[in-house]
Amino acid sequence: MSEQDSNWKYADDIVIESEAIRRARSQSLEFGLDPVSPALGAQLAVFAAASRAANIIEIGTGAGVSGLWLLQGSTSSVLTTIDHEPEHLAAAKQAFADAGIPSSRLRLIGGPALDVLTRMNENSYDIVLVDADPAQVIETVEHALRLVRPGGTVLVPHALWQGHVADPAKRDDITTAFRTLVEEIAASSAVVSALSPAGDGLLQLTIRA
Image 1 (cartoon, rainbow, N blue to C red):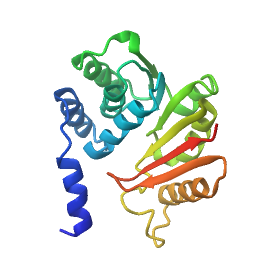
Image 2 (cartoon, rainbow, N blue to C red; image 1 turned 135 degrees about the vertical axis):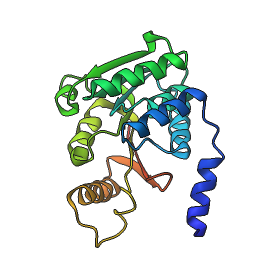
Image 3 (cartoon, rainbow, N blue to C red; image 1 turned 180 degrees about the vertical axis):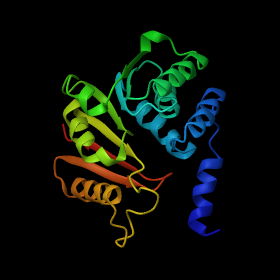
């Protein structure tokens, strides 16, 4: 194991996940999904706590792993989460219930993300998490930038896309989309941004107030 891989494994292993998150992670894997790693989940919780987020929107619910981490970080926030798969939403709803999160802090919306997002209010969210169809990541982040308030943050897990983004020889459509997104965000003066290697990568961009 390389030193880098050893560091990543240590960063994941040191995180203590709640029983509800562990169950949601297991359910995600049964669905064939790729939930955020424990280390990346912990980062999401820190972002939610540090920003004192009141309103969070998650694009791509999965079985609830990332949503649980966000709500664990900010215990007073309201989470709006969108997924096109009813089975995923049902599993996430159960995961939130298992974690003791009241329904008043949740809004689960079914439907294709790009259709649902056109109906959401602009400048209304402290955090927008983008973890939906990777083939639509650029379009989804464009919506996220519209929804997040000035001073708010957009978070994009899987930004290194299975380690392919850093390899210029990898030129499939999804890898190219993530690479284009990362490079354009890095060059933008409208945001403060960083790319973390935790998990499969986390692109972080905060809108300049």
